[in-house]
Length: 172
Image (cartoon, rainbow, N blue to C red):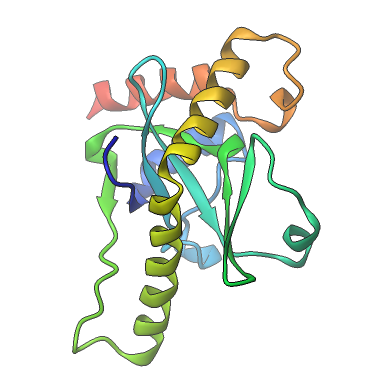
């Protein structure tokens, strides 16, 4: 297993997926989500690469438990972020751009703070790499093979998303 990284996803590709299912998380500059990070790349059963959206914690997340489709990123009792496995999306290399979390001398204080948080979240994810990969694989496998899987209704249609990914790449 390779180390996980954070990525930005091509906005046009996300828009295509969003047309199929409006639960695909936005990366639109109009909504201030153009810097939304995705954790990846997690390779699933059929060798399709997937990225999992990383979100800022909300009050509701504090009360939620870790499940097969949702994981909290917590360090030293602090909730840093959440991973929404149910909203993971298929990707190809040309649709992703790695996010640089290294702090540079020319970074302003806002950028430094953002990179520090991303670094903490990414470090936690890599410390839990095996668990996160297993979660993604089990969720995907259950979704594809079990018609009455309990978390099915919360998940994107992974097969349909993969078909759209292939179509999108054929156009490019």
